[in-house]
Amino acid sequence: MTQRIEGKRIAILAADGFEEAELFQPKEAIEQAGGEAVVVSLKPGEIEANRHREKGKAVAVNATIDAVSASEFDALMVPGGLFSPDALRKEEKVRNFVHDFFAQKKLVGSICHGPQVLIDADVVSGRKMTAIENIRTDLSNAGAKVVDEEVVVDEGLITSRTPKDLNAFCSKLVEEICEGKHAAQAQSA
Amino acid sequence: MTQRIEGKRIAILAADGFEEAELFQPKEAIEQAGGEAVVVSLKPGEIEANRHREKGKAVAVNATIDAVSASEFDALMVPGGLFSPDALRKEEKVRNFVHDFFAQKKLVGSICHGPQVLIDADVVSGRKMTAIENIRTDLSNAGAKVVDEEVVVDEGLITSRTPKDLNAFCSKLVEEICEGKHAAQAQSA
Figure 1 (tube, chains in turn green, cyan):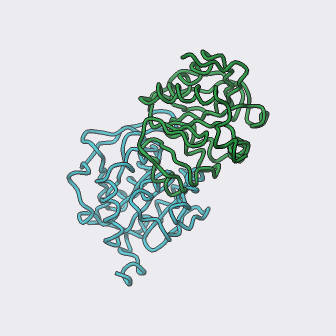
Figure 2 (cartoon, chains in turn purple, cyan):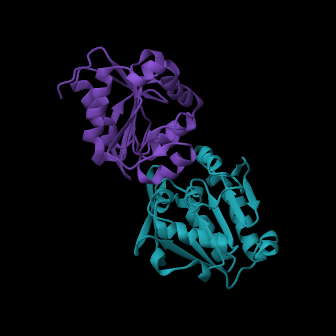
Figure 3 (cartoon, helix red, strand yellow):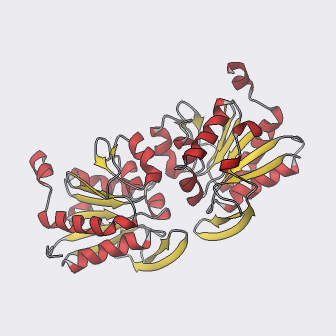
């Protein structure tokens, strides 16, 4: 990866039960490109991954949702797993935090079940995006234009389907962070 | 429980990762009232519960989705848990099976995340129902009239929110099975 993103701060929003590879692989891609990945969660301490139904590795929480605002970050990444988005989506502070990234025209990446959080943040209507097959009816009912592609970029919203798309997702995420605010978003801002 | 439901066959539709109490407690309530509970799943063998993120007890699969039709049953019950409804909702045979219970005006009970399966079966529009808080936006986007009550009965559709509602849910489920097809459904049939 030749793109460098020194000085960029990316919030990774997750809770217990995030899908292991969907947090760690983007986190490593961000850090290897020189960016700062900040794990934001509901409570301090650490959160533990799942590998589907099995328990996985833990990661340290760098900041709680109470202590952060979108204005501190250049981008947001929301991994999947079943328990993490399910816990996050019902929290008003999470919904407001996610909504603010869209209001501030900042990059947002999400994969697998992660877009469930975007549904509750009320930011998917009219957006071209993808996700794991299992939640596509919910995305479509929320107004998204759902497609079945490895990685989809729609004006700064980057989405992928499952862990097998992670290479493409991470490359596109770093590439878009490197470019900064998406041209189309900047024009409409 | 004084109501008796001898001769009634109730399909319990689940997959690995069903929430333990949400399958076993209704199953026991059905059997104690004299009914037959038939665990229907995607594959033969047994399926294993979760207790939230922990693994739980297994239950034997009595029939696979390939081998059953709604016409063989008097009612359907869909428990929650995160992995079970998530796996079921994307299977066309499951969606058709669930849809047929509604087309045949038969009783359907569901709790917690179970109603995710009803969203994909395209049967929630216009129905008064409840579910766990986390999926209420999805139900509302699918056209349901979502309320926050212990147990909701709407023309043969019985729904509850979480395991703490199981006593009320099981009582209502057995009561409605005992009564047979709901009066309002029978009238409109």
